[in-house]
Image (cartoon, rainbow, N blue to C red; front, side, top):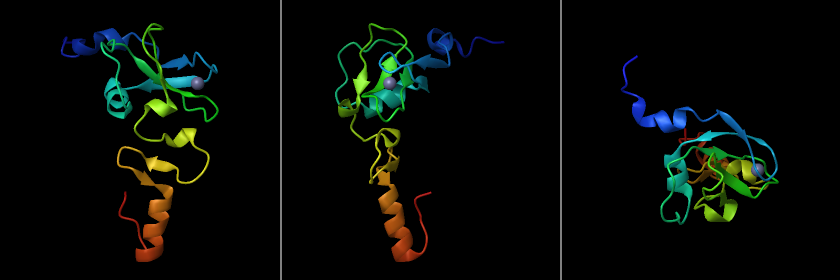
Length: 117
Ligand SMILES: [Zn+2]
């Protein structure tokens, strides 16, 4: 193996799944880039640690870190609503682009197809 991947060495050791510190749900890894692009106001000096995504709809925490000292992010800290956290329409299907299920239904109803995909 070459060491071309060593830039990620500090996160590769992180477990693939962590339990949410709030409700104990199994939570998968999420890219720091995703966290940074979805959190409304990043705290100063974000630690370079592995983040995890708790997708339980009854849990306020969305992102938490492997490092317990690192800030946790809750629903209200994010710029977009997280689909798995919402139980009523409009549920964002792809929150990267702001499409919701309602948008797609509206498009299918008016044009007979969806161009979202
Ligand atoms: Zn949770």
